[in-house]
Length: 632
Image 1 (cartoon, one colour):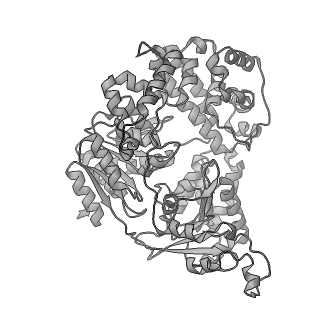
Image 2 (cartoon, helix red, strand yellow):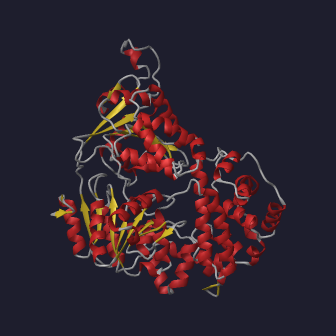
Image 3 (cartoon, one colour):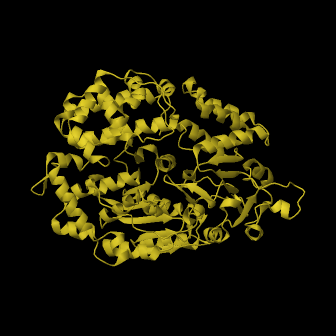
């Protein structure tokens, strides 16, 4: 079969035939094998017939990239983007959005998803995510039975069980298409401080010998082995560039790029300098003072880049464009760069076998490994892809590593959990009989082949919501109707903006409240100057006099956050704000973007036109502050 000028692989043909039959389809295939072509086929086919298709992605960066790609192909007027803080062309036939937005739309029965042929779930294995996995599960549960699904994932060991679950709750056929052959085969190596680049077999033979060089009488040195050097690894890779080097922290990405730059391994390219200058020409000169941008301007002309969430949008864009043009030889990136963004390299290096997952350090799992390793090898360019592990002997467990690199063994598991928002929308839109049926449809209930315990949790939620004034006699109050359209921190947001509390707020106080709600405190974040005032004192008094708000720990950051919110309120740019905090520019921008998103939720939830106008003015203040670094 030929599509878009390409001879299709059998798995792509099988998926397209299933789509033509009207099935939902689960595609489990290695990264880089061409899964997204199946999504392109659906979009192309249904666009021609005037039928809406929704494409969902787990992260905003991937949503933005797909929006740009589809806009080039179909025209910007035919593609929409919805990411919470940003809405473009929401009436378009091709809608791109984060999965959270789709979940919110199906949960509330938004009119925009009534006549959708297919919803595409890119990276469907995110359903395994402990914090966010319920989003994908609810998206499937609440989708219309008329809507078909295309679920894409690198590998799903229990894909048939997953398909059986969807079939059981959606009452239509679900086809599983599995493809296990990579278009570009991988060769996996390890980099040890003493042995250099070596194979798993050779390394496992000497595991546990702490002073290998001494025992073997090596002339290199009689010393205990150090952790290997990333710069030494790049030197030894030789012709197997470009290399995508995954490091598990933003700071490491930048420091490693800086260290490699000092080695002067690659010849400087003045054309890259000119490219960067042109890309930044329409931005404030202040951008060049940012530490990250300054380092990129030095490293990129030397073929070295870095990419992480702490960068401003234009910096990410510069790196991505140069990488796609083949002008970056080594790119240090965090793990999110492996998610769907189609930028493979000849080699992938992994800084460590262990990573910090937000709670503790652990060995990476097989799904994480294959997601990153899958970026090695460019189809039609490379005969092989190469993966290199940096090895710390103290962490090397041969048995665990062998299991890790052999095959993806992480099955999809349910992370279903009820939230206040879900409970309120169930009550608002469904009968008791429908609610009982929905609660029994979770993947957890299907996997365990027993009645789901969510019914008990649901009744407990109802009793608690009655006490807090969200329900009365089993029906939603105004406060409950309001909270049904708030998708995070429902209790706190509703307690302020669905009651009379907000009527006495000024713009500065409202900005402070949203900043407290959205801010994620970390020990490493410092605030260098505070702006105490009567406004903050009054807010503290309001919080202290309210049972719900007085218990909210987020408001403990009120004085600290005045460091950045007061200058924002006064009209200063984000560059001025950075003088008062250790937050990097990307995190600061993300905080303000989250504030805009939460304000949009309140504007949608409220029936008070004055409140909507008030929040619109607050949003204008934020947009003025971030305008010099913002982008989609």
